[in-house]
Image (tube, rainbow, N blue to C red; front, top):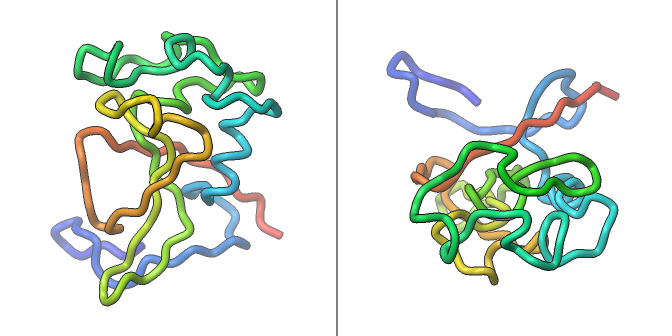
Length: 139
């Protein structure tokens, strides 16, 4: 990602899978981590109230991390609370697009499952989106 003097994104956003450092996970990596080695609908349970903040229980706000049950990999808040940016971008006409996985505190149960993903403009910001980084080791 390139930044200009005003710290806004400009230029081309690229993914280098051979880089040694931190990056956004791909959608597939994110979903693998969210599943936690299990086949639940949500990350760590089939009951979203146990593992995530969503429309019915959030009080219309984000919550501190690790207030709900983790999945079997020990990862918290992968269903609900905030949607998480992931890589796997593509071009939609002239706009660069990227995905976010899972729903947030303002979504219903259908958008909080580990298999849910949605695309959005790569430069979009929103009060219910966040990110989780992974580390590449370089190949």
